[in-house]
Image 1 (tube, rainbow, N blue to C red):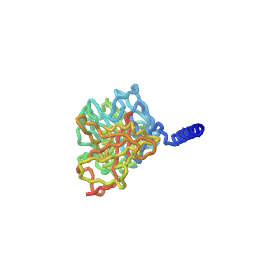
Image 2: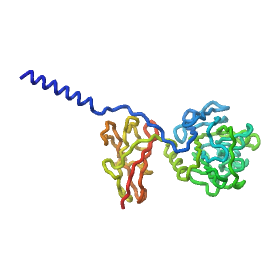
Image 3: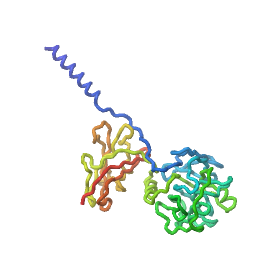
Image 4: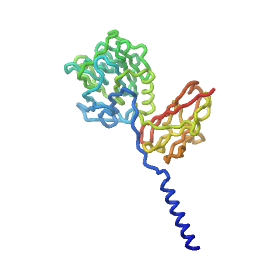
Length: 374
């Protein structure tokens, strides 16, 4: 009888060890691949490097030591008399469609002919540009302008000092009337076109430059830009107005143009994910962990679902967020309660997008289906 009990005990131990060994194992999660808007050909983030994060156009500082400072998103290029220079192999030329966008912040934005960023050369002189600069025609007006050597557009917004501004231009490849400039995601509707609707033409053999232009300084009385430039991007297509506004919003929330794609589950356990569009309650959302994404490292304070934040409760305003493995895959998920508000959703909305950052500053984004009920 004693031998039988020992045998049964050993069998139980072996079964327990075997059972434990087949349970899902936690592994350290890593970041997944970045998801960038289509058409992005060069992207200089200024995060302590002059490298092009998506293309071949790595650059360098010229006439000053490489310098970086706190930017709009992580760090930024810090110019103090020098400039950035990059050769290029794939930037838009001729009259092909394009978008140029970046953030800028300087102690003196009332400069005359002060070059910010752009590309294009002709016989070694940087004048046939696809670029954005300050102070049209030697006038320190605080206005920014697109300079295309004929295809020029002057903005109407006055840029404040020591303030971050998101500037962008788009061109669809037709004529100058379809060349648009934006400030903080909004189209400059009263922009002046001093030369009419010239067709944009950028020559082959371009360099990308920030904070300096030889033509403006030699012949236009230009002043070199001192300050910060961040999140500089070039696309081979014209972004739509809504896309430019979204890029601006990304920066406002400290997010880059490219984000890590993650899986989310709106209203975990329900299918379809329906809720009332004028509800003032909460919407539960699970940010799913995986072998490449550690959801426990999400900063709940940065999470937004279609612009709505995580609800806070109690005297301490504690954010309603907790970890659990909602889909039983062996990886912890972060479940957040999003504060719903009237007017956020409309009948017919089919998807909702969640954005956020990890504690280490990694941008992420996920989308799930929804249905709105009256």
